[in-house]
Image 1 (cartoon, rainbow, N blue to C red):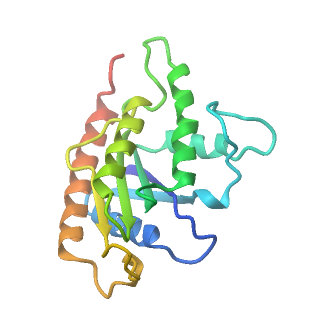
Image 2 (image 1 turned 120 degrees about the vertical axis):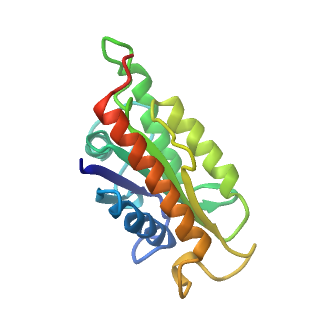
Length: 200
């Protein structure tokens, strides 16, 4: 069974390769071993995602199309950098827009994100990966996603340092190992839920 994953890239860089891109690629390599294809990476900063908590905030809102792509996938890779000890502002906006799922339940009370798996990919040059992933996981779980065991792959550099994840000569062994566990667990859980969704 081929599973589909979609990545939301919360980098604040307006263009060019980012460390978040590289972390998504690290996970993509691990997922490929489990027949999971990352069908698209959406760079959130490139889209006019209007503020709000509805699935469609009106004219010019890019979120409805992004929402549709998220719900068409089996696995959501929620990827973002740490800024000021928190996940980036564009990442937060995506979480806020998914709040609409709470009011979009089916006849069994299931949100549209039920039976979808979500993982986190976090990068940064400061402490806070555990704090950020904890907040992201709570938000994603609140809006219906299922979080597998070992669901965060992250790298943080030296506090106030100048080297980014994308600048490393090689992917650290610990990151590669963790990416493998994240991919294995997410693919396993997504396959189970695709075959046997939550009853509601």
